[in-house]
Length: 331
Image 1 (tube, helix red, strand yellow):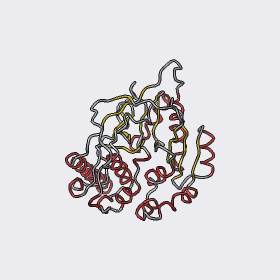
Image 2 (cartoon, helix red, strand yellow):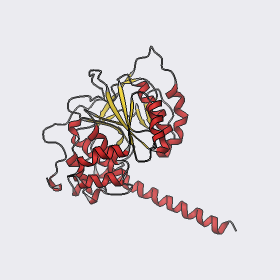
Image 3 (cartoon, rainbow, N blue to C red):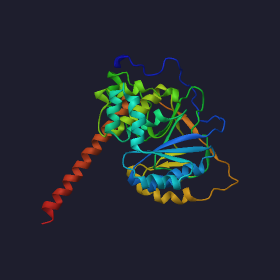
Image 4 (cartoon, rainbow, N blue to C red):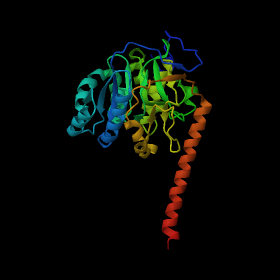
């Protein structure tokens, strides 16, 4: 199928029109495998975060941790000792499993070699048995919960965190000049997707488009997940429960988990007491809810693009101002 005709949604499904926030539907208590990606420098943080996931989930979970290429044998051993029901897949083992599957997908294979985050987009879906579930190693859970990795209805085939911005690799005009369609403000730190909604041919098409390639390259991974999500009629976890943390946000009673991205990661240690507290055995687990995802439009993307450019200009101005003061005003 040519790029110009690649459908933005699968023709055999219809989108959900429910406007309300609803609890996730119940399902049999089968054990779900959640995947994570860890680097050597984040092993300590990963232990705290994944331990909180396994501790507070009332739904049975197993964990598979993927090596980004920097884990040592000692890291692998420690992760499996500290975390129950956990397996570690080192990069050489993953290469043996994944590279043969990418024989007919050259762009996908190249992207996997170039970008460590590609493991999220490629290895984890291809190695998942059943539904795809992923959790970043910087997401800390605070209280017992249920139904996180369950669809709210039959039409929804993907769930994501909500971001504060349109953190995508494309420019606003690409929504006019390409068939690509995206949901608004998807963050791929936490993912659930039906296996049937993952389409490696679409991933190959997306990665073959030079227009979608911008730095930092890891944004391509998030953008591709969002595009897959649009085709799967995705919803977003309630952002008051599953929270993308910011520098000024306090802990609130509604929070179930916080995603401590790079800019606010030093704050994670401030929230460890909540994650390490012993839960009240009489307290019922919080039911996770979702919201319908809105479409990303050219105006929202343009506003975010302008804001990024403005921030970049201010950053350069500050850099040159500091350099000027150091060289001339200090004498």
